[in-house]
Length: 263
Ligand SMILES: [Zn+2]
Image 1: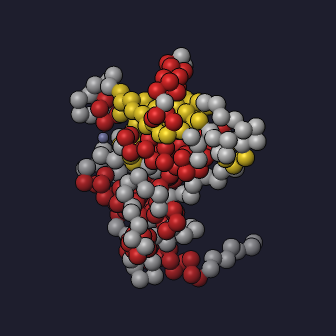
Image 2 (image 1 turned 135 degrees about the vertical axis):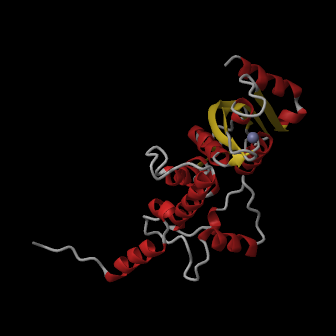
Image 3 (image 1 turned 90 degrees about the vertical axis):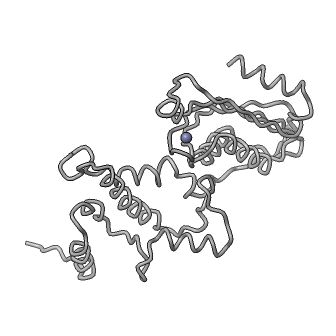
């Protein structure tokens, strides 16, 4: 019967982990991805030092992908899981016998890092730009694009829709329609406040497309108003950013807004 060889290194790692882990955190320490550097510094601290060395910002809605090395995201998930487990313990939830919360810390960690806040940790989607060959300079409206985000204040979901208006110049580089959704998703998959999110998206589109004007309207449900706080189920927030021609030309602005109303 063939025996499966286990490399010595792996065995000692597993043993070491078993020996040091306490009962409640046992289930989150199952992955072999390093979450600490060789010196024992938590991975989040290592990444944070790289950011600080460059004097860069790392607010909730900033993308920090260039400071993260390949493979480190897995380690970050494990670190978050360990701390999430501590949160559950402080909430006095019996994650040992309650089968529903047994792996909640790992699931929440994965959800934050790999899904809902992924826009902080992954690079900007690549954009194929097309020269404006037919020299289009007519108003284009893209939307509604579904927005899934969370507020920076409570990490409560923000679910909504975005419309983007672009007035390209004859020299503008155009991007494929689906790229507007991908860019929007990348910006929104971070803890945000809506007012800043739309501004960031507008800045980015201005930089990429160099249009004569950009307009964004976002309309969203804020779960921190509906689930907690005032518990007003119907409260919504609508805000808009107008740039360039949309700011100067009230007819253009009216045309854009009236087209949204028909949707
Ligand atoms: Zn909130």
